[in-house]
Image (cartoon, rainbow, N blue to C red; front, side, top):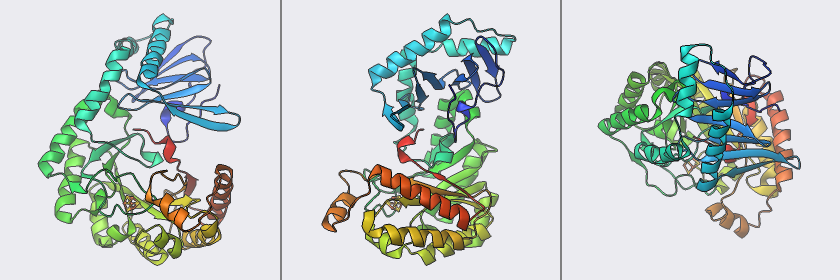
Length: 395
Ligand code: SF4
């Protein structure tokens, strides 16, 4: 059965079709294939990364939570397994591998297989405690960063008042000292072990770590580059906090390893942005993205699909396409379209019901997504224009 994998190496098809199990020793991952089209992948510590059973894709987070996905009635159904079900899934996986005949043609192959089989369901579940020793909650990442090394330089968001965003409601904005950040980096490095080789970048968390002053941010960037050499740095920033920096300073950050800046623009409509209680405007978004591009940085711009319901739909669609058309986007940039997922208990729902906003159905959001994607692709042919489903976030 073909395995989907838009942003994740672990779902590539096995490279060497064989009638029986094969082991593929790649430089950053071990892939076991029970047949020509199925892959089970493991990091170089032998911890499962993803596997497949009974029409379901299983993905393991670093805290050993298991996220599953399957197609039912034409729709994607996602779940996070309760701990006892996760333990059972690990047991079935490890038993399947232990009972299989898997040829190993080198010492390295043998060593990799032994590493996988050295794990038990209990040890895997216990990774949650190791994770919690080095990380505070990681609330969200952009889809191209699920295989990053997350480094928590700050916590929370400096604004934290957009009605639609509840990612950081549980924490005040704060910043680690450089000593604390160094300790955190050392802890993360030890926790990942050889699994670090699977990681492609650094993501500087939380919500807008890139807002820090030069005196604080530059040493953090230098420490990250020293402890995780060769990994490009990514991070979120919002327009109203990011625009305080000049193009020259963004360019210095690029020289320190910053590769891509992820910006939640949300919409091209000033009226919708104000209704969502997010500071900024389309003009400011244009100015800020232009500054980042002038500094030679890549950008990932996030627009929501369906926010503001039917009342804002036409204005949101037209202004968003018009903004995307004006922006100096190139190949290597990304435009994310994120189907809106309101938090049932959040401020957005209260505002929406007070304002008589009629929400879109899931099917209508899917249709809006397709229209926006097609129109932005035509208006801005350089960047990738793709889906950002926050329900699929995994770290
Ligand atoms: S959307 Fe961005 S600025 Fe608004 S609360 Fe969330 S993290 Fe903060």
